[in-house]
Image 1 (cartoon, rainbow, N blue to C red):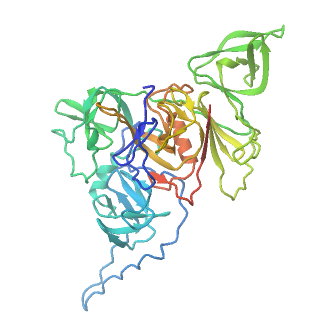
Image 2: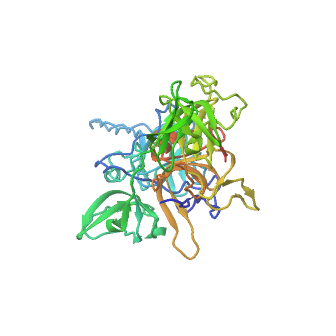
Image 3: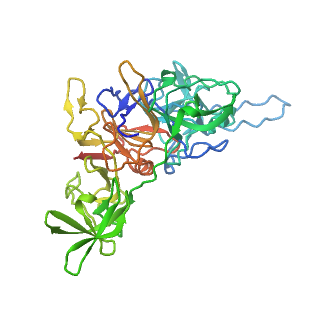
Length: 507
């Protein structure tokens, strides 16, 4: 569904790709949750790990020592102490990880359905307010364990039920997705048994879903002679009111010493291959590159009249320059002033030092290059704003660009969500909703890098200002960029101590 806007929600936090939305400050909750599925989740399957193995972290020295087990009375047989809890489990779509053991402390992460995280210590910290106890978790932060939204009980029967509805975080699309034909979501359907869900499980603000909005779901259920989709927030949607999207399979290319820039991609339609004739002229052949194909270039070109042709590494074939999206660095140096190297060698940064990651995006040409320091490691097509790109203009309250326009400039990735529901508010009309948009990464104001499951028009402007990637590319980029998402976490927000990936956007 081309040309849609993006805004993020649930309730507290609004993110988006248009200037009509209001971005929350760093203390706001990471509202929104789970995403999209491509396969029927198996019963009991929990959400997969979201990152590499987390190194061991020492227990919090401020945590009180665990109480000793009671001593049995004389003559009473000794009883084995129950095993100490090792993880905290999410019983809701949003369980916040906070920077300090206080209910209003800054959020730094989030768990969601089917997710869990290892404890640093089995000893609780004193709670306050509505939280009976906080627990320190790996690799950092604290979770309020209230038994309703979060639990230490791995045998909690609700966890098994929720696992069947957890997003498939090891897939490019964590949920199934479809376009709304105009529908109403229901909390209950006669003939379908549901447990007593924890409070806050359902998003009650958008029970009416306008046409051309989207829906994310985990499974289908038959009841009352109809088929229902079990949506990501565990409401029910009539299947005959949803048109499933076709999955986009396009993906970019990982760069090595054998696969190097410059590279040409082909958008919109197939493009012809050209060959040199005996008279040293370029002649069109019957062979073609298919839409979204790619080919490496040698860097050599030939001018014939007003036309420029580029030599490829494809068995002597040439391509007409205007037929191709040519991906190559716009400037010769990285943001730290070091020359960019295209030989495929290792990055100049020390192997045991911090990663210097950055992303270059050509909004109008429709491409992205990911770099480690001075070396490009990945290239792909993207879809930026359908109205182009422009420098943000500062107002009294925020920096804005025109609607459906991608902001030019230099930014950093500050927040990441495995999936994020994006909402565009409309006056006197229902909001546009993009349900559970996967691999969402915030870099400026209301703008994100994220997967787009509703179109397959890579290289052309399609978004409301955000940077769209194919689901496969978005998933790879999400795990490659910084801040990293710890094992089990569903979202992360960078602190001042965390490394972040730079984002450079030009036309």
